[in-house]
Length: 247
Image 1 (cartoon, rainbow, N blue to C red):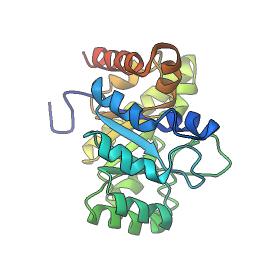
Image 2 (image 1 turned 30 degrees about the vertical axis):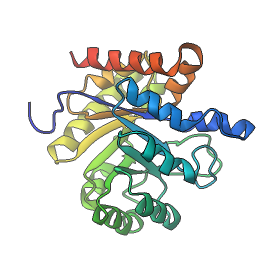
Image 3 (image 1 turned 90 degrees about the vertical axis):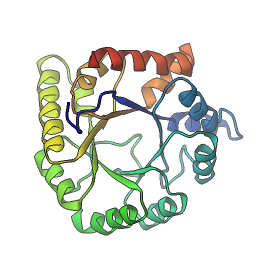
Image 4 (image 1 turned 45 degrees about the vertical axis):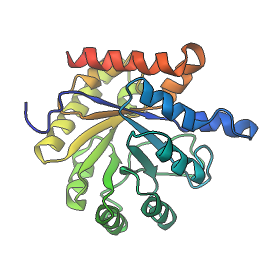
């Protein structure tokens, strides 16, 4: 097993939608910090939080509270804007995953156009890197986007698995093969591959079985399941499925 084939697949849990529920009524409950503490207690490997321009779920003050509440690394999802860069440099999360963001979208739709936004992204990637923040680019599993990530010097890419998750039958197999090939290509080029978006108990195992993937980031599905079975059980079940897929 080489250095880019992790022995244990990490699970990062996105807690945005705990904050979505909180914000629906205002006040402080349910607290995303408590969710982060539960994830840490049941064996999660990291916390992911997306601070959006419109603050529809995670708020600025949540970031500091999450960092203070657990020892898990914080992966800050952020748009490539000056405001978000300043916030990342101030809070210094373990990692910053640059994602596309449109105000009117319900959730992140598709990957970042790293190829088309190279000149915009280059100074942001450099400043984050200089601050000791590990940069990840959330991209579609496409050669053009991976080539752009290589040129930008990103140490990590997170491949968008939405097309795979939403496909059915033979189309899903096609998407899985595309993802598998791009993960292998990233690893051969010294980039650590992660994956996420739309992953569930029913579709996670073929992705988790791709040997070079180091981390899966899963949020909406786990928070939805937590309504019925509790967050502890939801995270434990996902962890079990991921471990079984790795064999």
